[in-house]
Length: 113
Length: 117
Image (cartoon, one colour):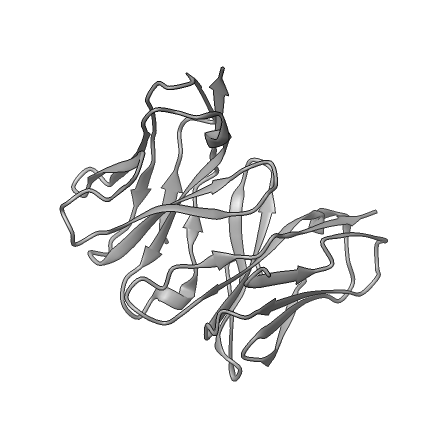
């Protein structure tokens, strides 16, 4: 079984709809992240969380919100989706330490029409 | 803010040959970590190799090695004996050092590697 799972894997929605992307991990890591990937732009950080009580904005947080429901679960919400939020979304996890290496989920392809 | 630049949008190499992917970065930090991730068509992000800035020795993982030039702020990836399964997008990434880990990674825009059979 995958250590970091994301649901749904693909989603098509309409402008103005609220949508939630979910991330779960069984790695026992304390830190979780949400990234967005656009063609030709690499990955950019949306939000990150040290632990359940700690949430921080990343480079491109406008239009997004997050919830850390438990150490293993970190959800990303688009309150009112718009077409330029069409992208590939990745969740990642890491354990606080020297390396803090991030391990990624399989990604969610979101299309906003 | 840190920036990561990958100047080669696409590279092509014959199977079994060696290829080098370039990455440069800009930072005022002295303590940081560098990573190469691979993204095959499955879109999964896979860690290839990592390097600590305060270690002069270049990291090696089987056929993958890096050439880390701290003064030049350069971190290139060398793939030896290229295989068809190496075909993917490769991303260079930077992370600040101790205390900055949870800020996340700063990625380059990627290099698309094509393996010619």
